[in-house]
Image 1: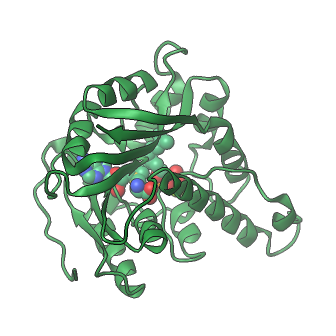
Image 2: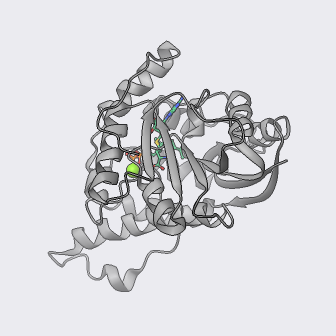
Length: 286
Ligand SMILES: C[S@@+](CC[C@H](N)C(=O)[O-])C[C@H]1O[C@@H](n2cnc3c(N)ncnc32)[C@H](O)[C@@H]1O
Ligand SMILES: CC(C)=CCC/C(C)=C/COP(=O)(O)OP(=O)(O)O
Ligand SMILES: [Mg+2]
């Protein structure tokens, strides 16, 4: 499969047009400079402990580049954890990355499983970027991004052995999303999401959650909505992992860097006051 140009359908809704424009115009150093570390470009956050020994002394002239490499290592660890939960994947399988961004997770999935990985994003810039990276890496016969709504993906019913949303489910209605995953997944296939969700135990979305929504033009769902929409769409949770404590070191390190974007405080405060959770859910398509 080769991809030299990207077909751009009209957005399904005005909101999706806004989101396409948002990601077409996105070029934050916190994403591009991290991606430049090894060519894996992510638009998600990190997990795991900070390696302070490698990070070294903040007074060293090379500290900032080590900090960037460390943030990137934690973001790649997040994608690796998502892939761990896909289960065994054969080389002839097709995986679907719904909301694939610049394609970092797709590249990692192909490198791990040797299989075909199909991604969709609303942003033509992101799809071009992901396809260019796949060409540069010589994997464009297996890795492809398309401009497409994840609520109506151009894949056959039952085509995918596994599918995922990595920090992309807060842009869509969850019942519509999971109905579409349940359609494209083979029976017995695996769905995984890593997401930020508001915690029903807190009551309603906190001011920090509202601030994150405004910052990214998204609509964060509650944990309860995820589980209910999965149950309604033949997706049975196999693992629900609270990654909140695992992501806090990433945010606290990021807040000290020159690459801050201003949203760090909202993530740190909402994770700490319990109003927001960073969650991995892996589900079987039954
Ligand atoms: C925060 S980025 C995550 C990118 C990627 N999953 C990653 O981990 O690097 C959100 C992505 O969701 C995509 N997205 C949002 N709504 C979408 C929709 N309705 N259909 C397809 N992609 C969508 C955006 O285009 C963007 O690529
Ligand atoms: C967990 C939640 C609520 C995520 C919202 C979706 C989102 C914008 C993710 C990160 O993208 P990014 O990597 O482009 O953001 P940043 O520039 O802040 O690193
Ligand atoms: Mg980022």
